[in-house]
Length: 245
Length: 337
Image (tube, rainbow over all chains, first blue to last red; front, side, top):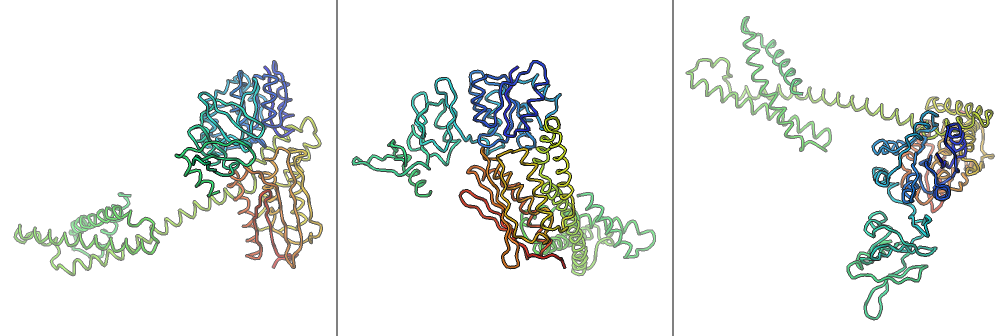
């Protein structure tokens, strides 16, 4: 069984490493110090199980697991935590695997034996439960040539919906994701506002609403050349929002 | 509740009957009559008070007391009136027989009852008030004790330290031993009395022990810049005031940063005041999820300062775009009065 260890604290990684080493038929394929590294290593080594800390700088363990769930062969995730009463309460109701630090050898062995895959629905239920801060992702996850790419939410200019996919325009370029504008709007409002049936834009990156000779209105951005059509229906709310912030 | 009322009513009936000194043999009859009458009043009053609940909610103690008293007296008056009229009716029908159990004089009967009702109601209201206060105090005391304990020993820190020890036991037994010693000192200090004063030097020592434990866990991500040389190290300060501020700064400021950062502890004299400032970097998204624990630790430090210096010390909190400041001001004194 291939195991990947994810924890931002070195002693914690060391100890888990040693405990897993002592178990039969378990092999450590890597150690990651944060969520970004974890996603990278998980794609490189395709582990069977992740032992992952919840409270990490940057992307939290729970969000990392949600991103990993989009992989073709998502690993099982067992969360490790020293003390996190809300998360533990949520895990108990969702029957998600977790271990309390310092981790006991027998519990680790049992958890690895029973490592069941965390399904996507379990994870999203977990994330939308009562841990509101976790429900909102800090990154979006897109597949680029079979590889997962993480896009920080604050670098995104706008989302534009096509028939099937949604285009994400961000500082580093554009990617396609498989999520509906409606859900994105629900998750990321009020930082993002609808300007059209097919477009959701970041208020922070928005510069102004311009009007052309025909009276058509466009949203223009600070550091992005796109000009997006603002529908008549969404214009008043957008202007209110621009004045307000 | 109903049983309590019935019991109370019976007790009052008993007292009244005793006080009236009925002829021997009539005692029980008298008691039964009084009970019947008083039960009407008692249960009627309970019903009136239940109905009046929406009226009484969200009013001050004085208002509630006055309204309740008025309602209870009105109920008594109403029941007395009804009893008198019932008596008249009954007497008329039975041609005077059995008139003995009903009052003969109308107004004095009602007035006497209302007066008794006023006294008894006031006593009962007072009793409810005191017992409610007592219950609330007990509850509040329990809650504040738990909060104080949690503010002193943050579970997150305790369990993480345990984990560090577990990791070091094999890889670096000497370091593990030191963590155990440091933890013991820290917990001994945190279990000390709230009011106990220590020298500034000792408090800084505690904060440094804490820093050493956290550094093992966080490695190079944690940097603490101590600028406290100019302070009088023999000045007295309540124990566990600087350390919790450092703990807060690390927990909320350093841990969420992937590359870590520096906590600055700056101490200086301003006139006769000692000013100690703890500054940590803030992350953009750390604001929302951190508030509760943060407030509790700061409230606890504030309380300690207040206990020791009675209004002469202050804790100020400031935040700008990328830093969080906590500034503690306290009088410099080497002896407490």
